[in-house]
Amino acid sequence: MIFIGIIIAIAAVESVIKQVREQNGTEGERKPVLGGKLYVTKYHNHGAFLNLGQKRPEFIKGLSAGLCLACSILFVLTLGMKGKALLKAGLSVLLGGAFSNTYDRLVRGYVVDYFGFNVKNEKIRNIVFNISDFCIMIGAAVCVFRS
Image (cartoon, rainbow, N blue to C red):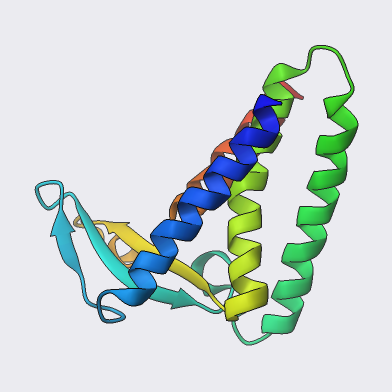
């Protein structure tokens, strides 16, 4: 099934990228790429988006696992339905990213983030992302749009 393949592909690619980042570079060091538009770094996020909840990592782990479980149940329920391809695709992309970040939280104790946008606005420039973050945002947006 293509939707399960999407989940596995996202989680697998992210796993490889995160492992490479863990083995290379110093945390916080920034290397410009793509003509300086992006930078590659290594950052350990002990919270959720923008480090929210970093002082309560066990809560964040539980919340992350619980949300993964809820989305997985919804995904399984939609698999048997005819149509709903856009919802299935959105959930697949969302779950691929969510599984990757949740795995990091549960196994590593932090999420590996590794790139940012080299823009003038310092607040935006200091946010470090991983591909899973965008998968979660895009998947959620598709699911909301589909609803």
